[in-house]
Image (cartoon, rainbow, N blue to C red; front, side):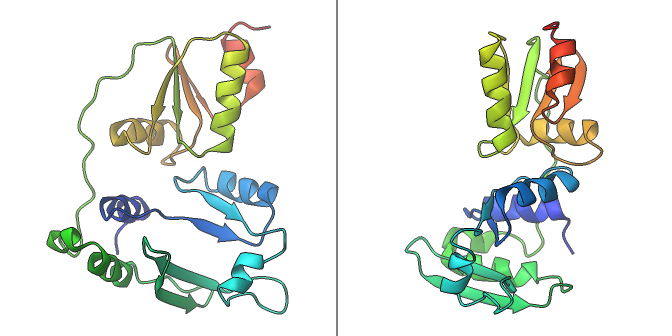
Length: 204
C-alpha cells in the first residue's frame, strides 16, 4: 500500500485536489490536525448549518454525524465515484486512482503504483527568517500577520509546491509536514509558537 505522502503526491500529479470535510467545528478540526502533526490538504467544517453538506450528499446520519465516505467530483461538478465504508476500514486508493485516470486521460501512462518521488536538491534559503507554509493553512496566515506587524523581513516557501522544502520540514517535525515552520538563522520553530518567536526574534 502506498504511504500517506506518496498517495497525496500521486493525487497531485493526477490534477486533483484532496479536501477533507467533517461536521465538527473549526476549533475541533484544528485540534485534530495538530494532533497529527499537521496535514497538507484543506479541512472544511460542515458544522453550521450542521451537516448541511453531508445531508446534500446523502451521508448524514440521524445521530448528527456523517458516514465515512469518499466522493470524486469532476470539473463539471458531477459526482463520478462514491465509496461509503466503515470507520475502521482503509479506502482503496488504487480504485480512486483508476477513477481519476478515466477523468484525466493523460494520467493513463502513470504506473499503477508510482514510486514516491525523491525531492530534487534545492538550495536552502539564506534569509534570516524563512517561513515554511501552505497556501490554505490558518496558522500560516496568522504567522504572516505576526511577522508583518513586527516589520520582520522573511522569505516564504510553500511546501505544497516545493517538495524538497517539505522534506526539510519533515526532518524538523518528526516526520510530519507541520506548518508553519520557521527557520530563524538556524533556529527551527515548529508551529506558530508566538512566545518562542518573540524570544528568538528579540522582540521582548
